[in-house]
Amino acid sequence: MARKAVVLFNLGGPDQLASVEPFLFNLFNDPAIIRLPAPLRFFVAKVISKRRGPIARDIYKNMGGRSPLLDQTNDQAVALEKSLSDLPDEYKIFVCMRYWHPRASEIVKTVKEFDPDEVILLPLYPQFSTTTTASSAEEWGKTAKKVGLEANTTSFCCYPAEDGFASAYADLISKKLEQINGAIPKLLFSAHGLPKKIVDSGDPYPWQVERSVDAILKKLDRDDLEYQICYQSRVGPVEWIGPDTEEEIKKAGAKGKSLLVIPVAFVSEHSETLVELDLEYAEVAKENGVPAYYRVPTVTTHPKFIEGLGNLVKNRHDGGMKSACGNKICPVSAKGCAQYLQVEG
Image (tube, rainbow, N blue to C red; front, side):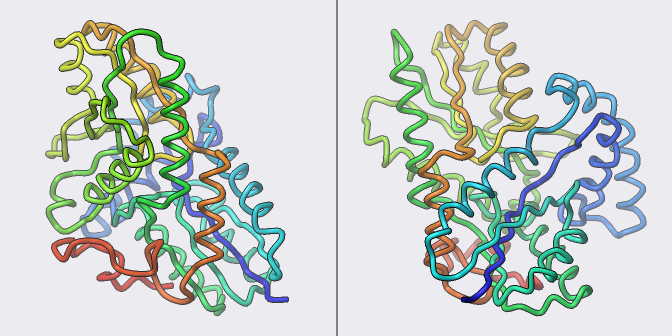
């Protein structure tokens, strides 16, 4: 019986209010996020985390003083391991966070102790970005090399249109629509934004978000739905990709349209969904005359999503960095695509 280690990558979040500022520092000190030379990036990360710390702490106070992301990722790990339990090989699931515990420095050692024949890196970011999946994979590769973890490694870069992921969101949207009386709301597919300069450099993230929305709409199979893709969580003075979620909410209010928001790039609940979408944007909707504002939950442990993750693992193409189908799916212009990049691991 072969031993397989499946590592779930996720962003991470502070586990207490005292962790907020160091979490933010880890985030902004990542060269994939702040693309400056190391000494200058360190200084900028210190300044940003110090300035944003009080604001972020207030956000996490609204969430009980901590992020629920680790708990939900652990739940996903348990569900995925159970879905793989009937296979002839032994699959053990590990959770690895990028900016807070448990980080790669901790999990690589645990995986090495497990002594797997193969390591499978599976990001909980359906859409690839150099700022998320590539960053996690690079940190893992460097740490594994340092620790001496030499098992054959297969990495998934993306699965934006994976059947289980799309089916799970289509099911959640359908159930929410069934609960709504009156006019059908406009669907806002809201994804976390990126600075425009990162996308202009070839990051395929918005292209992949569009593939996700296409796949979900195909599953819904309805011609009576108005929808819009938009991007949230814009910070700082630089130009970000759009359209902006908050601006789309205001436009809907001006037209008297109700809204149903779908967090299409998130598979777990955290500050961007529980606070930004549920509290801050709900208030924007109310202030701007949106008749009704609804939000679809993230897929989390939806059976279809877990089944989809299991199918990725079962049907993987061994070795290297692969998309869900094993092939490069991004357009030639996407020079930031994982299969153009030389990511260690």
